[in-house]
Length: 213
Image (cartoon, rainbow, N blue to C red):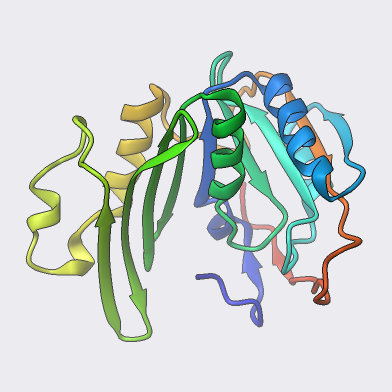
């Protein structure tokens, strides 16, 4: 996981992300309705990925803002301003409301995750992560037909669910490669600011390294 006590690089932050099978404007309005449970939500139209960065930064210790970016006419990415956050909980909530497919991946060298939801239910989870000096591996749900069945049998846990493999799984599920963030031609972008009035802990600002070029 990204440390909250050290500077956070954008290149690492954007290695975890979620997507839902829904076009961007509908995704943003639906997420806004979900977040309205906690208070007023402000939705802001954005034009470019650089606009998204200006909207989200600096990264924080708790989510206050989201970016919804149209990966295609059919799929939307969901990211937030919380350092290291994958947004799977958010796309799972969207899947429950829309009954659409959703996926989340984490593709860091020391932490790889795959989460898949269909019709509002999580159907698959695979995790391979380094905790201090020990690697841990866990999976739940039936393997999906496009998964490499031999991967889970690799003798070393650190070799399972590699960065390359989890990114390939994203492409196999959505039909789209993970975006090259600064250069992807997103199909609609919107920002959402949620209400934090009921948050009981201080929200800390994280020093952010802008190395995503």
